[in-house]
Length: 314
Ligand SMILES: C[S@@+](CC[C@H](N)C(=O)[O-])C[C@H]1O[C@@H](n2cnc3c(N)ncnc32)[C@H](O)[C@@H]1O
Image 1 (tube, helix red, strand yellow):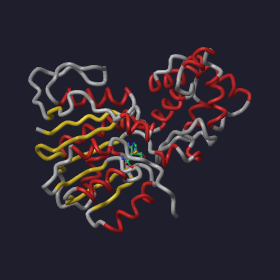
Image 2 (cartoon, protein in one colour; image 1 turned 135 degrees about the horizontal axis):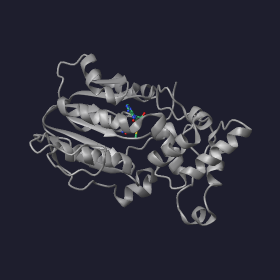
Image 3 (cartoon, protein in one colour; image 1 turned 180 degrees about the vertical axis):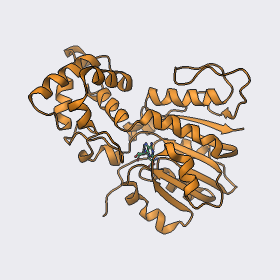
């Protein structure tokens, strides 16, 4: 099957700028997507092995050209929270890496396919699964208790109208199942006061859709577990690079870096206060996260919320 790769890699130049030149490197691309990062790394660096991971089987289609050209490339369809197991099970002569990259969230190949149900603009079924997942958005919207729905929308979408939206969803689903993305988006729109609808530049359904997607795919736990697995898999001086797209993700990355670089300070309840004598395992390279240039945002508006953080194994 031939499908056009619609994903434009975000902050590619910035990501590439951290990768060591002039030595042979082992790389994990934990979020292969359309393969934008992997392709650029294979083309510009001395790669001994690149292990790519993506939970979405659609990534196999975008890896075909790479597989046919490079014997040092392999792609595993799995979740990056299982990074340690994936490395163990993959036939590799070396089990430690110089670079591990995460480019979080979804790719345009997923959002722009209305059948996947990620988009509130194009109509599609309420699904939102990135790969295999026990839950889907239809289940949640049509079966979860109002209180639980409000909690999900608030926690994962930081949506201040979460209670009103949950109430409206429950009211509507009593009449008939809410089964597609535009139905849900219209219900959400009604919950916003007129002035909010006009003033804000973002669509009223943005945060609720983000919340559902994060919940369906257990994205925040995936990230915490994936990051935790990196430390034992990195060589000395090896790098972790993470591109995140919203504050919930960025906070987890920032906390993970701080926590493992010996800082006692924490910004959220996700990590406990550090004991005084914990040995630092990472050095933070980007004191402040890098953000895309205006020129990139202009060409690819999806990059506008991206943040890149980098840390190095000590
Ligand atoms: C933003 S895209 C990556 C794009 C890629 N860097 C490129 O240049 O084409 C994120 C990808 O990560 C995958 N993904 C998200 N969470 C994942 C997880 N927990 N485990 C494995 N893959 C995941 C998604 O399926 C999606 O294809």
